[in-house]
Amino acid sequence: MLVSVEGIYHNGRVELREAPNNIPEGTRVIVTFVGSNEIDLESQGIDREHAKVLKANLATFSDDWDSPEMSVYDNYDNAKAHLEAR
Image 1 (tube, rainbow, N blue to C red):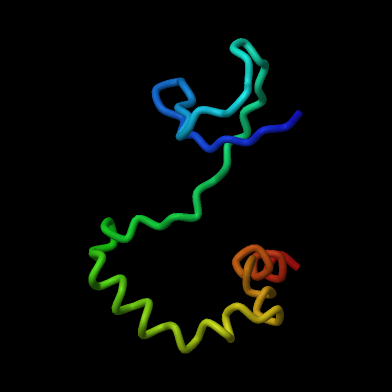
Image 2: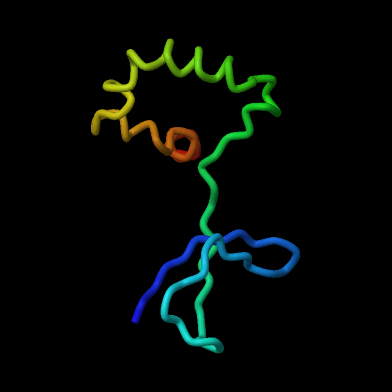
């Protein structure tokens, strides 16, 4: 049986966002830490309203950014460093 439940690591413990159904107490678990894709906009001086405006203004570019051809830029810094090392 494989059941996934989202949680947050805090003070040495994993806090589950919801209780799993039909899982007996004492069941063994494996915890996998997942990196966050969230960007702290407030630390960059961008509040929610400003973020909405930016998102709307940049929406016209989303088709280009999401195209398969643009994936070459996903690891641009690593590729550039590899070329410079030659």
